[in-house]
Amino acid sequence: MMLSDYKEIRDMVSKFADSEVGPIAADIDKNGEIPSSLVAKLGENGFLGSYIPEEYGGAGMDYTAYSIIVEEISRACGSTGVLVSAHTSLCVYPILAFGNEDQKKQYLPKLATGEHIGCFCLSEPNAGSDAGSLTTFAEDKGDYYEITGTKNFITNGKEANIAIVFAKTTKTPNHKGISAFIVETDSEGFEVMKLEDKLGIKGSSTAQIALDKVRVPKENLLGTYEKGFRVAMGTLDGGRIGIASQALGIAEAAFRYAKKYSTERIQFGKPLSDLQAIQFMLADMSTKIAASRLLIWEASRLKDEGASYSLASAQAKLFAAESAMWVTTKAIQVCGGNGYTREYPVERYFRDAKITEIYEGTSEVQRIVIAANELKNIQ
Ligand SMILES: Cc1cc2nc3c(=O)[nH]c(=O)nc-3n(C[C@H](O)[C@H](O)[C@H](O)COP(=O)(O)OP(=O)(O)OC[C@H]3O[C@@H](n4cnc5c(N)ncnc54)[C@H](O)[C@@H]3O)c2cc1C
Image 1 (cartoon, rainbow, N blue to C red):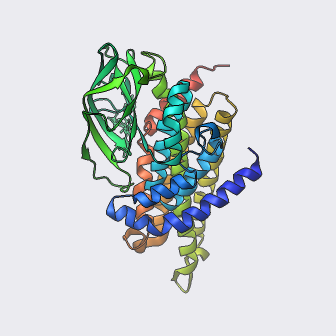
Image 2: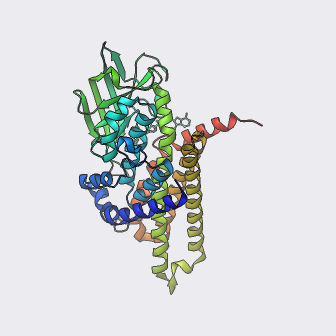
């Protein structure tokens, strides 16, 4: 795809975000729910199948275009942004990258249109950053597997029709022996146990899921038997670009709001924007946002070119997430007391930004990934 294509995509998504998502973002936050009519519109516009090839019913775009879509939707609503990101990065991508032809033909067309929503079940109550210690078990029953365990904090868990589930097929204390499976959530024994009440991204469902002897056909093993941890880590490498884009969109929204507010609010007989203290905050916000965007584009470009992008995606996520937290904090500062109230959107941006430092690998985990990559390369 070319630069002009990306510009066109940004304009198109931006118009959609401003007309269809932004006006209901405060309600989504307040009601703790993304209306199914909005999910349907995301599907109709191709935003849920952006980089699914056309032969499987998708829009056939690349990862750079996808990151622009997540950024623009998240600028309007962080909850809706992560619905798109988790569905696409964490469910569509592993099927595309590790699935066989039959699995792609069976699952991708409905994920592309949004008729089906996807989720990714890796974390467990006792396996977060140390995901390899998960204990969900898939017992070989001859012509099917029987999966039992508990999955924690599953984004889209309430809406999802298709789940990528990680389970041990051999009981080991570490990541060895993990296999990945495509699980249909209407299977008997697959149950949403609880929905989390959260600080931010309140419209995005975060579910604890119990799997009680869920029967999964043998043909739903995703990728190589007992190489599931590679599926998980390979998926999260790309997913981090999506979360970086979510963070960027939230930061951009906070910056735009603070900038405009500073030109309208009069103190000491002049707009706040005339004060150098305020200008310096705006300058730093602008710079962190620009740097985040460049890191995201670089990681996306490497991924689109088939080059190694694990380091770049961890850097993009780390920097964009910490920048989003910084920018949204300063946006409240620029707006003063008003910024702290629910009448103004900046407190929502601040609450929504925090999660980007936690999921798909905390900032500490990104630093571990970055340091490990750098230390492999001593010159
Ligand atoms: C809203 C939300 C949505 C989520 N969505 C999903 C989802 O869709 N699918 C899914 O599988 N999971 C999901 N998660 C889980 C998420 O990925 C984990 O919460 C995250 O990986 C951190 O794990 P933890 O919460 O168990 O924290 P812990 O691992 O207990 O970490 C606690 C703290 O210790 C630090 N820490 C841990 N180990 C190290 C280390 N070795 N070195 C330095 N510091 C360390 C962490 O950085 C963190 O600051 C979601 C979580 C939330 C809150």
